[in-house]
Image 1 (tube, one colour):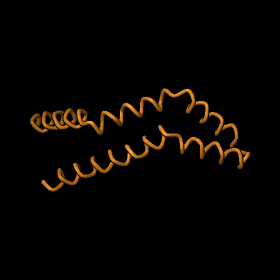
Image 2 (cartoon, one colour):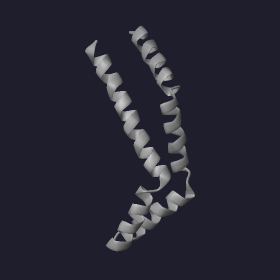
Image 3 (cartoon, rainbow, N blue to C red):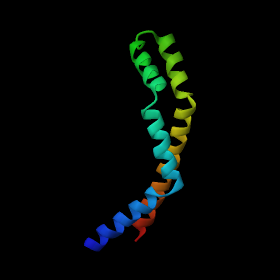
Image 4 (cartoon, rainbow, N blue to C red):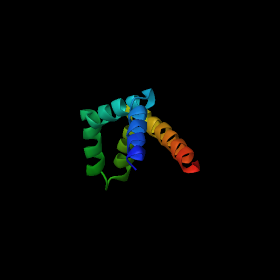
Length: 91
């Protein structure tokens, strides 16, 4: 069983070192630490009863270059991990 754990840890390290995952973590960090996006989220929450303003702010948030990039990377990461799961489950 320890061999399985060792192989799993090795696989995780290999995945973590892939450029796709490095870029994902970099962009995720930029999003998480963005004051601009944080303020936008607060404004979205404050304007939940004002549908027009809420939609405008939400559109601005969802179209922000960092968010667009993050969503694309999340999709790529998800597809990559799904492919790995499919390969593992075949064995």
